[in-house]
Image (cartoon, rainbow, N blue to C red):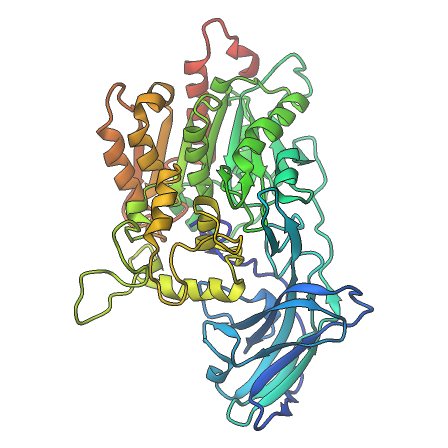
Length: 575
């Protein structure tokens, strides 16, 4: 759910949080102050010397058996790295404590009362929120991305504590005081190179919507000979993916030692190493194109899903009418639809297809890989139009068959929709988890009465709100429904431009919606779709693609040449 990059906790299969860093060798456990009769709690505060203003946000306490990586960095929504508990705080002043007690939501254990007695490493953090006075009249509080991609445990300006080792015993009670004495530093943007350029601009459209300066960006990979062939102009590949600052297609100019295990993962996914891709990109008879990774984080996620949204704002228009024209004016790109092609996997897969569908006159084709659900009759494994509950399969009288969010490629189930919903509930109230299920709601769904996204299902009970599902469908975000109901208009513009691929055992069940889309597209006529669907078999999981990056770019180059207007000199970019 792309998940790639977000839920990419395994090298090529996506994970929730970036796991880096390490700290504090084991000291002896500190005896937690007895709180017999007062329950279990942590008191989290910050000194004025570290942050002199009031804080509205969310306070977290992390509890782990290991201190490497430090607890705030070891949180993994797809595994058992540690425990997390959180509460909202409003206008918390320096020295004032935010209290995380037994009533605080937790994941994967629900309450501090459920933590077994023992010695633990503990750490606290506050995710600082910004007040947004939106153009639609709603005022909300959410975390303003600091160009880290909504990674709250790495976000510049957030405060965190030293790691302490304490003894916790819910039967005896405890009161642990943690002071947020450290501040996460600013992100260091990689320096430009002769090959790679970094772009960041303020968006007028998004700034107006959010009532706060908002930014778009791009990482631009230039073709061989760009500085020598000053007369040449180039087609552009727009790559959608989760927010990151690294090069498109993992481009890397120096050879690195790779473990055999990682090489096997690359082979299984049909990918090459970054250096091997560089060798192709820099080689002879390779399509000379510009590759761009688009960056558009939002207060709700590391990525906007590249469409207009009542909760997120006009990100689709901002990308098409502000960011891409800026890029085309600063780099020698061919500013014509046939020369703009799209690709992306997982979240980027959904975005690449959505960009082509919502802006059919602007883009010239999409190579969409393992996309997030593109037919909401298979929203993961559920049908959100008919199923009553997101947590359990319908039709059972005496048992509950849980719905799963993730499985291994061999079929072993890993995490349920209920468990991940619980995690999002802990990460943020009012849809502010900055995670996968809730960005779908923020992108596709309506605004709730409180100004925050209206949830598709209740995170505690799993009950689906079908009015939200129908809103999502009727506003075009169910891409399969959009295509089959609007084909008379879209068909002539999209014929031959849609290429979709997915593994037959996608770890997030995303192949199920692709099967539905293929059935829809095969039935379309006047004109026929002339689409291409490819499936990785057997047991190919999330991240599988039908060719290496270099092979796919060759396919895109041929497509561009085929669709270039008569008389267009494509040889200018294929020297």
